[in-house]
Length: 448
Image (tube, rainbow, N blue to C red; front, top):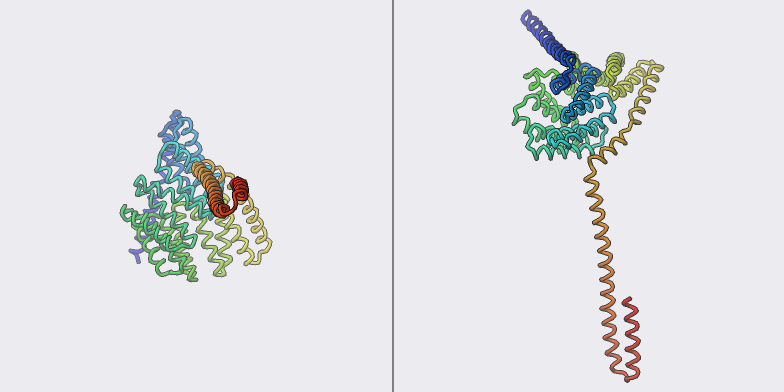
């Protein structure tokens, strides 16, 4: 028992030490940045420092992260650095996506895509297309998401990128899973896994295991789902990827909850929550509170659900997670109703409907139209040319039909003339001459 306690203590000390080291590293980056800005060194090195800080704060303090990104964009514009601008637009897109600001996310990824095409960077274009696909995936617009993911996969194949290709395959697999085509989902996840195994990257292999487990879970094959989630967990623990360990415990928890084994599910959610708290990943922590509360409501533990949802709501308000906030408000209204707090339930439900309306009334349709105009123009031109050709073909067919009809009339008329001539030859000369004259007149009228 003493050994176990000692090991736990050592583990806790190790985690604290790692956190302290990470904090020191960030402090050092900020000191470097301050020094460069004071000396008016607004160059590529400064942009890279800002990007690194933005990336760090993306999960812990998103609003602070976006401030660093905005400054990075300003300096990138001053230096006319297209590549850096593309990277920062990509950051903006992911940030706005997490905030539920789909119109702004779409516009940012649109700009990133445009820059990638302008500078002729196919690899950046592949990732930009995947990011655009993610926006449409969130909106359940499977067809458009699939179009972007498929184009990304084709480009990744053309340049032989074994890093980018499995990303696209996984995304296509997610669309197939969402559309209920589980056979195709398995096929694409298996393709991605094959590349990951060739690269021998445990974290990415574990990522694929989680996706495969997810499909088995949806199909109700909980045994195989547990097996693949277990494989993923093993991989992530080997490399101590706390973020992915948290994700996998969340998946395992959902797996048990769907089997109505709620006690084990809650244990898994608690473990996931612990990992997210340790790395201060705010959006995943918020989602974990929400998922846990959802199943606590199914268990009849409305009080526990209400506490977790309040924690989730506080995080949403602090960090601006509007998309998650909508879901949290809805569940809170249900929790308060279960507890008999009908006034609070009504208040949360009204807040939910207001937020839902505000999110649905954004300019997503306008941004989509702009994107289609900017990036599908060539395709539309091809469609226009095709339509013109089809019209020309139809016209040619009509002309051919008219010609065939005239030809048929001519042949029939000729046959009739021959028959009448033969008959006329048997008549007297005067009568024969009059009939032939009449025939010429009739044939001429038929041909016109």
